[in-house]
Length: 378
Image (tube, rainbow, N blue to C red; front, side):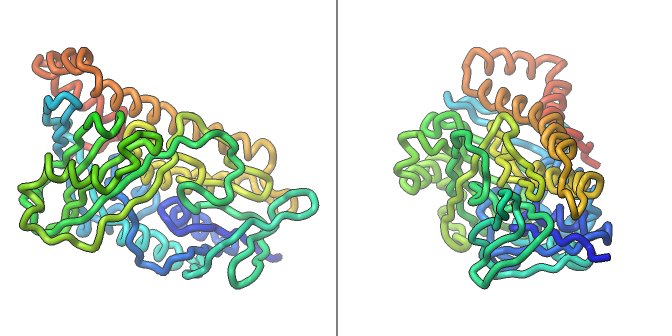
């Protein structure tokens, strides 16, 4: 019998993870399409929370990334009023450049039997007379499929989610040869000009750091993004980048955040990762949730998809419910943590707690909530 054909649009973390899990079953013809050619540079801080590392462990890829990681075990936090605190909760985050992470995941999927077609731009989803997805239209022609999984990032061109979008803009750059290179400390600075969001510095491997900002698209300062970024660099990192080498150029990318899960599945289509708006509204972190959604979607397909009927109503509802149950508590906790940093009274209470014997315990609890199943530093 013919294997059901599944087309995945996008080879980022969600699409790659889903392709890898589906290919491992041997039950499907898996084809991944991406408009870029890999490896490709991706605008992202590239931070991998303990939750993201857990997802990579489930994919069997975590160990192989150890030589290509930067490690963060201390977070230097700055509030809007200029007060600072160093957080060290006994866990570690990683920084793996997306040029390596995404390429590594999709190549592992290819090794398991998935087909990867690079340089293929998908223009639209094809639908039959009953409005069911039957494939995709690309610049090179039409491709039929039994199921299409949209992993085309933020904002997805193919989403049927009609909710108003809350878009966060980013702008970032990479530098080599800063005093922060090789450090295990990251910076997250909440600045009033960023309207509730933050600027960051993350250490990457090979002596590189990435520095960037996040800001709501609706914020007044978002209209002068490059000037704002230069102002922040001058204020917070001028000494560090003055004699450093700028690697490439500044780059930006939008992220659509959410605090609830919208429409993510039809009988013959699914949405995963940023295409499903699965980005934390507090931290604007999406990699771990992208990986998780790809893994969950593959499991739903394996249990609830038939070539004839597609995804059952129960399977579609179950997919949405699983995403909501797993991710929304983290989204709400992350948003609450980020907002609390901006309120002086709450920061004062937190400062007193940190200075008490409960400080180390509180650090760990916060990190566990924000990162899910945290892993102790060895």
